[in-house]
Image (cartoon, rainbow, N blue to C red; front, side, top):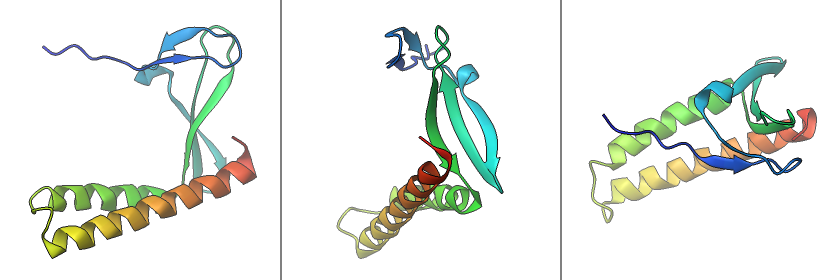
Length: 108
C-alpha cells in the first residue's frame, strides 16, 4: 500500500505549519450556484480560500479532463494534439477569469 503525502502549508497569520488533508477542505455556497472551497488553520482558524466554482467552471474542468485523456494518446507534433492543447489553454484561462470575478465579488 502506497503512503499518501500531504502538502504542508504554513499559516500566514500564526506561522503554524500543518498538513493539508482532504478532511480540512470545506465547501460553502456563497451565491446563486457559486461554491467557495476553503480551509482554516487548525491553530488560529484563519480562513484560506482555495477556489470558487460555478457550473461553467465545473463543465470546463470536465472538458479539460477529457482533453487530457485524448491528448495522452497523440504525439506532441500531431496537429490534433496542438488543437487540443489550445482548447485546454482556452478553458484554463476562462476558469482563471471566472475565479478572478468571484474573488472580486465574494472576497479572497
